[in-house]
Image 1 (tube, helix red, strand yellow):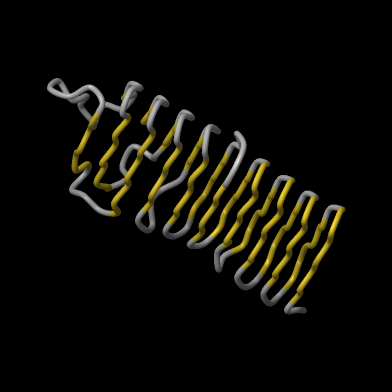
Image 2 (cartoon, rainbow, N blue to C red):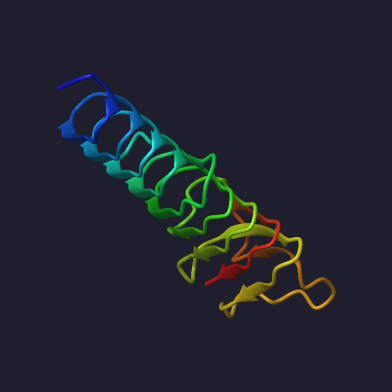
Length: 184
């Protein structure tokens, strides 16, 4: 049932089918969670975090590792050091995701505002063709690649793109210093 509070100095933590909240912290180790009824708080110093089907959202933070979130409510995902990759599929609420030199890939329909940041990694955003959203994308030295018919590349500034798509909706802010932004 839960709530569950799991702590590990060195070692992985795995949990599934928890009705209430889950808090898991590891100094070094991977965290893996499936089907959690309430909010998930996951933090590891060195290791990856994976969480699927957490309807009330996830706060995930790793110093050096990857983060994968699938079918989650309002969530945050942070890689604070290293080149960890963040992958999010089926986000059901707001999303804040940031990584240093790792890549970021989000595939979902926006049900809340998104803030996606990578210092030097590539960012890829895949949205359904009919999704309404407002896009504000900036890459200081990388390119912005658009693979959608309903979004036009900016002719005046190839490193910044701001558009309202399909009547507008959730705000999607995408920022990278040296990476490439791909919108599909």
